[in-house]
Length: 266
Image (cartoon, rainbow, N blue to C red; front, side, top):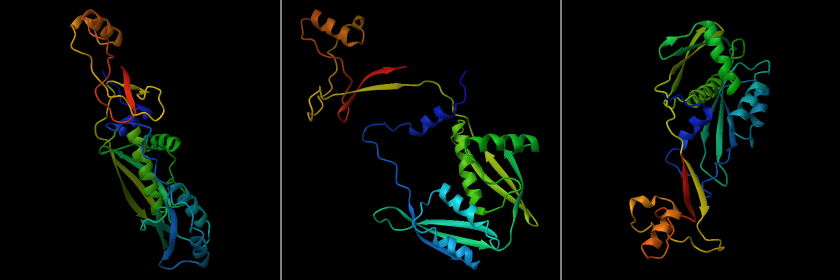
């Protein structure tokens, strides 16, 4: 019987088929805001805040913090941020277009529909609290409603379900507006839960033989030997001695790079 993957083990499956090595590419740098503009009309104070976006980091955390500052301006209504990439220069750059709607709206309620079944209010509240504790959610009953925050929460909910083992989960949002209140309904299709059957650990050592700058020695397999010899290097040397041939190390087949696997622990 297999159990659904906990969060940290589910994350391992993201890298299935990718060998972690000293030459793994570094994560891309966070883009900066190179252009910021207001779409439509808005108060002068909003234009001043938009100018402050220039040169700032364009990740979700910084943009959410900016949006929360902007909503405190008395004349600011509902905001949406459209982020688009610009041609690459020395570092990644983006354009942020701020769409302003003078009408102020608030989140009236947050509901969840899981695999077509709508949760009761109490169960939905408990689920919201669990996801908020792990990922942090912005769309909360009573808070200001902004379309950009729904996209941030959709990414957070999707990450949370993937960490629970639902790697094929999909998240959509349905909005129902009643005057200045908006009901947010998250519609989640979880898909199959991926379970952990076996963990394989690769133990690596340098194949250069301790010589700095020397290329790795080619990996060679042992000569054919009786089945009773086993698969360890010691058994290989023993069998070679019995056969009257020089001892040869048991090693894995060819492996690119200066690192060769030495053992597998199950």
